[in-house]
Length: 487
Image (cartoon, rainbow, N blue to C red):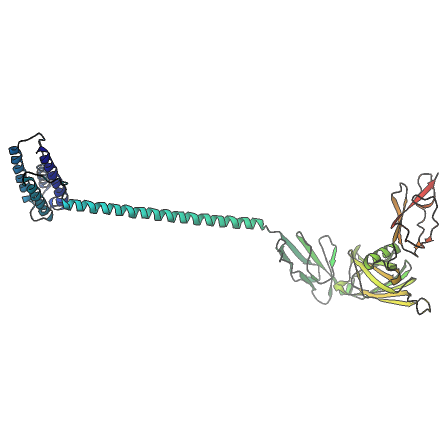
């Protein structure tokens, strides 16, 4: 019985807790009109006293007799009724009364207590609702946290991707390093240039210089040439488009007054040729001189063969230069100068070609070669060249070469004449069958030794020079000829 009573007390305590919880909004909310602070303090003290009456004291848990249990039950019922009378009319109080009546009926119903949890249905539902609300709030918070973490991860991923892209772009820019080269264009007195400066990235395969065009101030001045920073000739074309420029540089356009550019005429006999040059007024400044010098037949032959092949039979060449203030210059505004060459020493062949060697490049040029028949034999196609007429705006070496179709395939042999330590070259000549090997003369004297003659290396028979090469078929392509001395 004591066990049942204890359960009942626990039930009542639960009801009291629920009643206090649900009625707190009504029981504790009061409005007062006070006239002074003393009255307000008095009201506070009374409220505290009322709340103290709700405390439970001296609850005994010892075994009680059935009669005592019934008396205690009656007293408790009376106390509960007393407590609930003061709060009639509120929903919470009504629910509490019903719960008390049901609990009392259970206790007095045959003296048996139903083994049910001592919790009011409203409290259970409220607790369940609160639990569900907490769980829902927790789930929402978790969802928000997950959402925030996802957003944070996405943001971090975006930042990492942007950083990677920036790093990649930076690396690409570093790999694609620029190589900027600036070219400046200037003009001497009497002219101007269309472009004064331009910069190009040499690492850009599509980049290229546009160039600059030189023009005179008026008709009293004439463009002559472009020169580089060292004063070297570049071109006599008015439009200069730089090429093969690898560093910053400056080009200057040269101009001269026409009144100071008189006509030039010059005639020189050199190397078996009579050479005459005629330049009209306005092509070269006053004070310009002409240099006309023949080149060796061997040099002319070598150049011709390198360009035309082994069927070259004979060749003669001349180097023509125009000198102003000790510098070599070209005709102004790329105008042409007339050159006439009369061959005192005639050359023979079936065909004739005129070559021009300038700045290391050799090419065929248009020219008129005067020829005459060698003999009256109609089957003999060999001719004799007597002269050459040509016009050029660039000056250096001019070569007239004869070719013979019958010479194609003949073996070429080079004779190298050496002296002293037998390594110092004194003279070289390349010949083929039918050619004449020249006598190079006496080499320098060594101490008190006397020059005896020229000998093919390894042979004891002295060469009788000059000599005709009957055939080169049995000869090596390189023949060493040694100078021998006697004390």
